[in-house]
Image 1: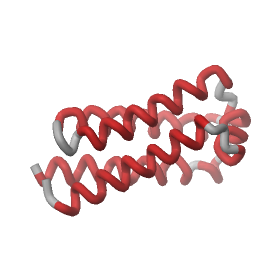
Image 2 (image 1 turned 45 degrees about the vertical axis):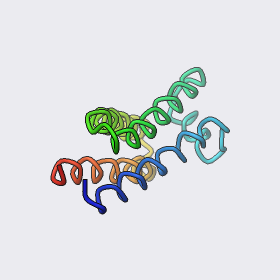
Image 3 (image 1 turned 120 degrees about the horizontal axis):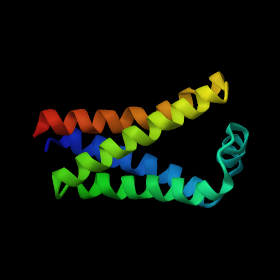
Image 4 (image 1 turned 180 degrees about the vertical axis):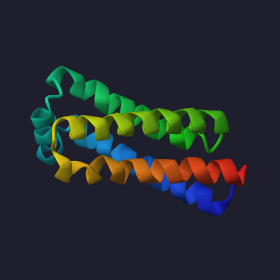
Length: 116
């Protein structure tokens, strides 16, 4: 794996990990919009766990590439679902937020594909 791919993957994993921690600590700027979108509170820990697992999986992919690919695909699906949730809630001004997490994951996947 190239140095660029490694740096982008680590940055994406840290960024997604930050998002997971934000859900776990119930940072107001994260959970308030979730409530506004109609996401049940009972789902919040699971959403945080999914992001945390994806973050760890991206890092694990540096050692076992298939794990990183699977984690990346899972995160792409997760954040695509987040975009759809925001759109369904008609909070169009919030669409960029899940895209800010989706973009580095897609970049990490693309770099891993072309670097390997």
